[in-house]
Length: 380
Image (tube, rainbow, N blue to C red):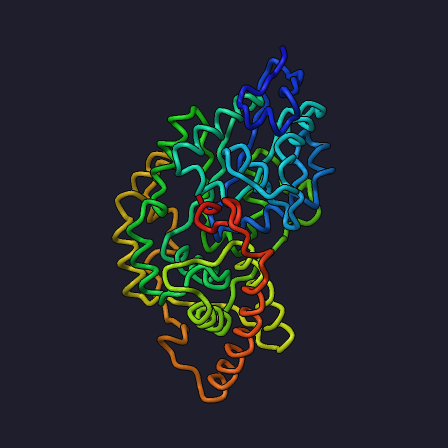
C-alpha cells in the first residue's frame, strides 16, 4: 500500500511533486499528548526527549523535535496548516520519512499549543486529515486540572512570558467565562474525528507523585521499566517575578498591541537571566483568594460534572476532592503590598528590565511581520 500526501502544503514540504511512502496496512496507534497548559507538559516532553532510545526498545517511536524541551510544536503546527519559521519547515516531512523507516507500531507526539490549535475547526480538520494520511490512529492524551488552580498557574506563566499584564482577578474572571476551560469540547472533538480520548486527572497527588509515571501509564507503559521518572521542569514563578514582568510589559507595549512572539520570548529569557543573576528569582505565585476560587468552580461545575461522568463515571468532586473547596491566600503584590526593602528592589528591577526590553524591541530581526511571529496565531 502506497501512502501519498494529498495536501498541496504537505507535498511542498516533502519536495517537488510530493513523495510517496510505503506504509503498513495496519494503522499505527499515535498517542497525541496536548497538555493543556500547566499540567506538567515540559516534564513529560523532557522525559520523552531523554528516553527516545529506550522507548524505541519498547515499541514506541518518539520523533526528534529540535526543541530543547522535546516538544513537537513545529510538527503539529505544520500538520494543522500553520506557517513556521524557515528552519522548521522540513519538520513534518522528516516526521513522515522517519515514520516510514521505523518498525514501531506506536508513536508519541507531545505539543502543548495543540490544545489551543484544535479548538479552531480549520486547524482541527487539517490536523486529523494529515494524521489519517500518515496512516495513524489518533489517541488524544489530555491531563485535566481543576480550573481554579489551572488559572492561577496559567496567569503566572502568561505574565512571565510577556503576553498579558492585567490584574489577576480581571484575567481570572474573563478566562473562566471562555470555552477554553470547558473540557466537554474534547469529547465533541474526539467524536467528530473518530479519535479515542484518554483523559487523566492532574491533581495535587499527581504533582506530588510526579506527572511522568501517570503519563506512561496512560500510554500503556509500566513506569518501573525506567530508572528515573522524577522529572520536574518549568517551575512556576513567584510574586516578585510576576510583578516585574507585568509592570515592564505595561511600560513597553503600545496600546492595543501585543509584542511579537520573538520579542516576548526574548524578554522572557532575559528576565529569567536578570533575576537569577541578581538573586531575585522566586517561585510560588498565588493570585487566588478563596471567594474567587469558589466562583470559578461554580461557573464550571456543570460542564465538569458532565465530562467526569462521561469519561470516568464518577463525579468531578470525587476525582478532585483534594483540590476543590480549598482556601487560598494571595501573595500578589497588587493585593499584598511588599515591604519597603522589597518595594525598592522591585522598582530597581523594573527600571533595569525596562531598559533591557527597550533594547529588545529595537531589534528589527525580532519584529518581523509574519504569521508565525504573531502571538495570537501561535496560541490557536
